[in-house]
Image (cartoon, rainbow, N blue to C red):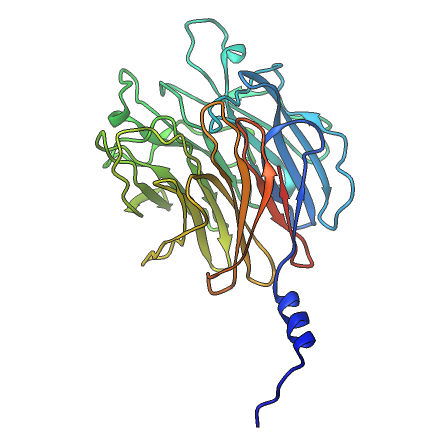
Length: 370
């Protein structure tokens, strides 16, 4: 015998399975938010504030349960030494051992010691007990032609990985670019020299950013947009385990332009989920041995960001219609645990050079910051 549930009960059941989305503004005027949540249920937020060509990085926190943000503080020790122009060179953040806050960003002209110097790759950290971030330090080493944004990843054992792409000494063409990493084993106090991760397949899209993830076992994953030929713009995955990197091509995109794109990467249960752009649409996939990707959302989408709640639902927020000096609008899709789009929505206009950030609350709802 099949029981028929009352229509109202069906509605209540459907509502309980559908995650709620709350769209919020940043605590002060700013762009390019990045969010991370600690095991102690504290939300950390960094964003850029000021002139897009010479801005500051701001950091604040709030309880995961909600409430007001704490008074923001400035990350960079040299004023106005960050850059927002282009959307992909701003700050990225990771949480390390004992809740340390690790931040990396591309420096601008304000950060150069002289006009002839290379644009620096800058790092600062906030360790427990400290009132302010450390003095910013340049981690570029002898690599050259820094362009698209860098990434930072950390785990709870004190290992930090700073990842960026640049050319080796004496070269500056796109096909020669490598993905580089500098490891720290002391929670970001000191770093080893740069090491190339894609030596067998050089060539990186110069004005696209990449995204890194560091597992508890020390395995590093990096999503990046390749440029081994002038028309290649497909995404690749680097997996570096025990110091040995392997490369895997995730998709193909044949176009002779630089998309100025960014990507997102997060732990999703026992696997990693990535999100990136391909031909103007967001692509997402579990980065397992047999990767099966899916395109979601509307056309003309960029800069996806990911979050997952305790129910196994995933939100992918992105910006629609943005471009060089052109603002776009917020869009989000929620995937059910099977990866199907269960709900979609829009959230108004975002500032020029910006994109959203998102995180999940304990009740399964999502917060999208713009």
